[in-house]
Length: 415
View 1 (cartoon, rainbow, N blue to C red):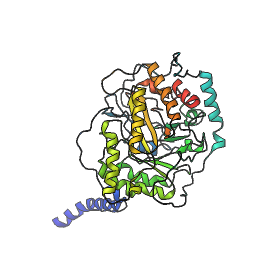
View 2 (spheres, helix red, strand yellow; view 1 turned 120 degrees about the vertical axis):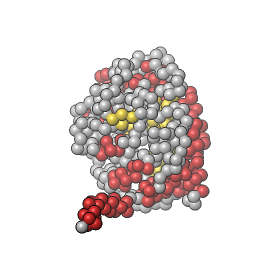
View 3 (spheres, one colour; view 1 turned 60 degrees about the vertical axis):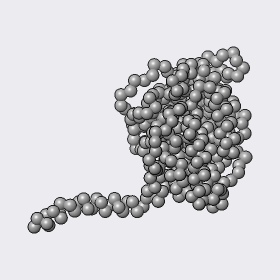
View 4 (cartoon, rainbow, N blue to C red; view 1 turned 90 degrees about the horizontal axis):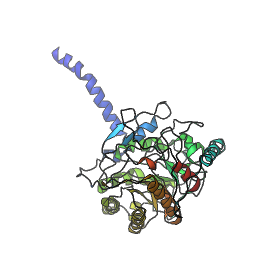
């Protein structure tokens, strides 16, 4: 009787174990390939915003009325907080316009009337730009990297424009609200990404091209789950986010190969272009990308299958000259086209931060330079968010109330 009673007591545990094992059978093979342990990384130009849980947040966008759970990096570059926890907002706000200097290299801030005109036009035209959510894949093609003269666009809004929106704000806001994504398009924005495989329905409806991201190993399940709901605008995808950085994707180059081959490369057979992992601008960032391609070939895969179609990069510093030199050197090193998917005028090495005017000059000069470089396909500044979480608030394109800042207005009208 004691043995029978003991068996009855452990039956629930056995049932749970069986269910868990059944679930493992359905997981893609790369999900079981854990990254190797790594030593602490160089903190030079520490990345500014944690994205580890952004996919979970966006997945709740249709059912969660309050914007809870969004994770971003604190000012110390290490600690993340969940929205709703106590936080002392920076004293500086980005809502006031910055007066441009007389330098010919610096653009003047647009007037509030000009910004409102663009926002109104974007909102009123959204009904005419609705996109279908067809998940039908294009005809299969060779898995070899394809050479393009420029980025292939799948959207219908501002086609050919390089400017994109790095959008961590989900899909809660609707037309008429200040933080509605349609207010951040103007006559410049043509695409968006969310640091996740999740897309934003309201952005798809107004014709923006969606660019999903496989953020890291933890998101492989979402990567597969979301593909069936991607809009037909998807023509480019992004690989791991800052794999060389502790607190971000943080995976060794050799360990990332399995995810690329098993989970990412199949997109190319559907006619979708593959972006490399986006490293930080720490010295080991470029090294990681080069090591990844070498490790991929060393593991027996073809050079074509191991070569991305374009190379995203992130950059945080206070010097326009250093930024331009970094992008130039990176391009020369990888030999491919560049997407600058995060950047801001921000020091993370103990130096002085940018003044409001420095920040304005940084963005306006870099945007103009990006437009002049044929090898730079896309760029998206950081950040379109209410709370910059320790990043110099003057970089914000969105005010705390969700409305567009003067810098944001400049980007979508004049960049």
